[in-house]
Length: 462
Image 1: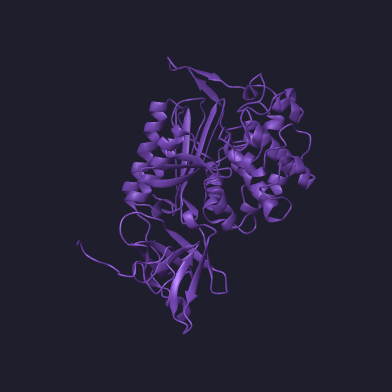
Image 2: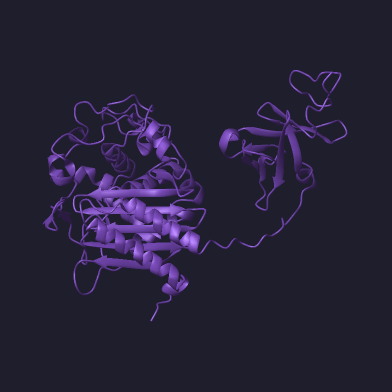
């Protein structure tokens, strides 16, 4: 008998999802593996595989989620920004002086471009008590910076310790308390927290050359908690994935969540080849022709991944209780692909504009930048969309400023001003876009083309 959630996917899709996680658990030799798929803002499928006979783990069993914790910490920082308590361009020193890493900006820390070391000084923080590192100086060491600030993406766990300390400084409360009151409670993530609560999985190391297991220690990370302390479930992370797709005004607006999903770090050469980069607390990758955002996580005994395709409106969460084994990022991406390809998103019905402004409608149609043809459309959401009519080229949407001008929202023209220029009779002469002149005809002699137009006009070969 199927549950209402299962009925939301076709039987063939459910079987393909189950097959994918079964292969991952078996070939990855994980004691257990649980997964969830999210669509239309809610979980539509849960699956589990386990080496233990009897009842397998479900969507309420906790696993450690490692660095997915960083995304939660990033949301807290973005809330501070939205409340005007900080700016992403602020130096850390302005709000948290004396760390030795104060020349990095808040944005640098969020995007792992602060130049900080990847790890804290020995012994390895993930397998030792947090009491060994009671102060920020213990986490950062004597030389916190390994690279020039802002020049390269270098993943840093200590960087998110600093962000957690920043949250505590500006909120006047422990990071854990702020997290619970500002994210977990509003989103209903009641099975997410800094310490395990039954039922929860045990963490295991699986011998690389034998089918044998060794229990991993479960340490409290102390100061490093904002980088990787959390325990959660596929049920809770499914709700969190829905939030990362659409935002929630009780926590963070859709616009600010979209900003988190936007690339913010210079990519290494290998990252360019892999199609991977980093936003503000979110990993970004291109896989199977689709853009995926989310975060992976690992701690001794546990692996975790949350992956989201906004365009497909599909997300996947996969958790396992082994130190190494199945490649969960690939598994989660495959779960997204399976649903997106087997049951593609049905678009909303086309609807016309509620009101048509003749002055805006006059801008629609074909324009030329030099000899390059572009189309300008007025979209149902009140934006202008500019794009090449043939081949690839610069594309952008523009938002009205209310005074007849428009501001670019993305790509090459992000932040640039689009200004329709009118003749004395009121007709549109041309468009001025960041000094580029767009005309109705190629090199229109009636428009102020930079450099002028040859008075003899167009000609053939003589």
